Length: 107
Image (cartoon, rainbow, N blue to C red):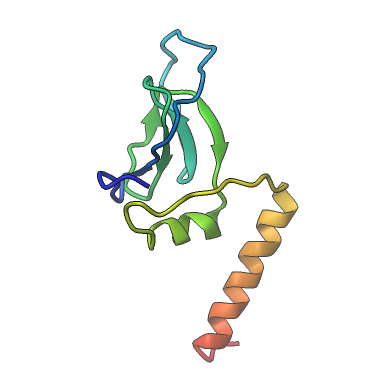
């Protein structure tokens, strides 16, 4: 995670990714957690303050529970990606919700 990250997006450092599609893309709606690949080949994970449209290729989308954890990271922390299916993301979100409700005494 780079020091110039903020609520708009978490910028990642490291070797640039090879981009096969060099044409400018049309802007479209993007979700919180979308991993856009910027022209320099470096990923940007969109945060809660991102704009409503984007024009860069989206390589992946970080699950909701994991985007919450990104906000707690510090510059220099490492980010590691792992693929999960939609049902696993839903199950993880349900578990975190139940865990938070139990902690707050609401469940």
